[in-house]
Image (cartoon, rainbow, N blue to C red; front, side, top):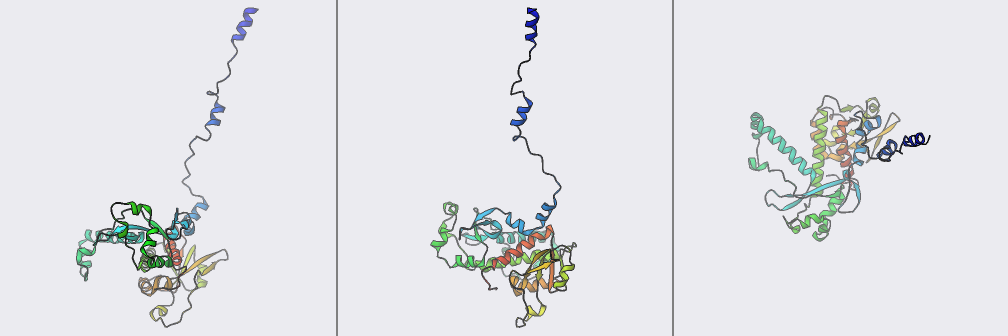
Length: 327
C-alpha cells in the first residue's frame, strides 16, 4: 500500500511555468504585436478628405513664422531658402515658388532640346539675354529655409525693416554656415510683388492645364443659377464681363472678398474674383486660352486632381487678406 501511494504521488503534474503559459504570453505580447496593414480600400470619409483642399491645407506640418512667431500649418506660410545669385554668387533669399518655376522652365528647355524642330521655332524670336545665357542653371538652395506668413503686408514689412532687425529673423543655421557671410544675404525690396507674380503664374498654369483635360474639371456657367445644375462643384471662379477688364472705366459688380455661394441648400462654395486676384494682364492671358474661361463664371469640379489649383486660389486670396490693393 505504501509503495502504491508513493507511486501515485510521483504522477502529480508540476505547475505550468509562466514562460510557457499561452495566456500570459498573449497578455504580455498584446501591445507588441504588429498592427495589421491598412486596407487599400478607402472609406467614404477618407475619399472626402482627398477631395477637400481645406483638409489638405490643415494637414501640412506645423511651422513657425520667422517674422511673427506664429505657429501655423506650413500651407499658410511661405517657404524661403538661400540661393546664389547667377552673376554675383551672393546668397539671396528666394521663395520656393521661384525654385519650382525655374525648374519648370528647365524642363521646357530640355523638351525643346530633344525636339530640334520646336527648338528652331522657339529660337526664331528675339533673345535679349544672349541666347543660351538666358537659361541660367537652377539656383540650388544651399541650406534649409525659413518660413514667413503668406501675406503681402508681411513681405512689405520685411522690405521696410533695417538689416539688424531682419537678421534677427534669420535662422541660426544661416548665420553659422561657413560658406557665406550673414551680412551678404540679400532680401529683395520688391519681394511682395515678386511673390505675387509667381503665385499668379502658377495659378494660371494650373487653370490652363485643367481646362485642357478631357475630364472637364473646369466647366463654364451661364449664371449663378446654373451652378445648381453642375455635378460635384468645388469652387466658383468669377472672370467678370469681357468689357470690364478691357475697359477699366466700365463699372461691373464684383463679388466681395470671401464671397460664398450656396449649393443645393447643403453647403457653400467660395467665389474667387479672378480680376482682383490675377490682375488685368494675367486675366487676359487666361481669357485667351478659350473655353471655359470665355464666360463670366466657371465651376471647378470637386475632384482629387483639382485640389492643387483650389489650394493655390485659396492661398492667393489669403495673400491679400490684409491688403486690398491689387497691382
